[in-house]
Image (cartoon, rainbow, N blue to C red; front, side):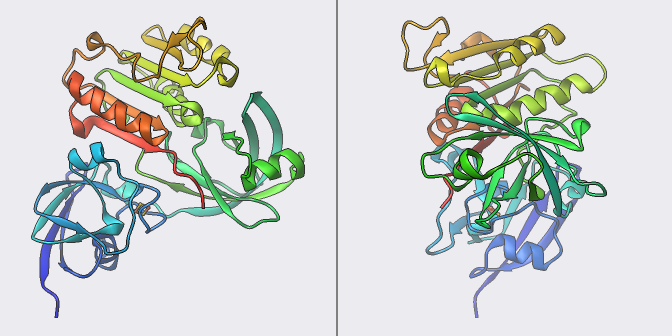
Length: 340
Ligand code: FES
């Protein structure tokens, strides 16, 4: 019989739950069986929804499992509960409240309103929820869409906010062999019906934080970040200083520059840096959105950072922000994970 350990989960709203976990079961399985409201989706280490920060104790990885957690995130104490086992009594902090963890995803139908290419490799897909359907989400969370005719699920974070519902907008990067890309290029039509499921993910705007915000986005990682910035605009009261560093490989891959200019006018406290790393002669910052970060960007120890983009960018941004003085627990990240 395997040994058991006491594992405590502390939620951001002050609620806490302790359960006994056997050494041979995953922390997520044990927590869900014990009724602990933890966010989760894939249960296989690939979506980051079940991320938590270990404060005390030791864990090991579930044998044979893989995890998308980056070395910098692991060093900062983050763990994916669906692929982690307890090796001792442990305490974990969750970055969301117990009520948020208990939200149950819903399945809805939506109509295609428009399919609009907005850059050399990005399409904006506008959807409208069917009458009687509703899908609430926090800015930064993702939904799954079932690709019509293929039945495969793909995950995207809306660039729109809940205030725009029943309209929902997704920014989709076109991939040469992608099933979603193929459908968008040759099968999709206005008024087609698609199935959506969500919301998912622990990457969402913590609305009560009033310290400076830094957003770092690569490619279509701009979508959840822009949703967060728009939500900040919708919330009443004084806005904290905000910096958005956004980049693509080349200038023809950039998109939403007019939209960003509009946000700059609406939000005087918003600074934006547009970056291109493969065109030294372009008029934009020459380099990645991480290289555009400067020491003077972090002057407040409570600064909060939200990062979304490819693995390498997230890893570099996490290290750079911590080096500049952002507390590891104030760095929230969502990386692109290739679909199988
Ligand atoms: S539920 Fe753990 S990574 Fe997806």
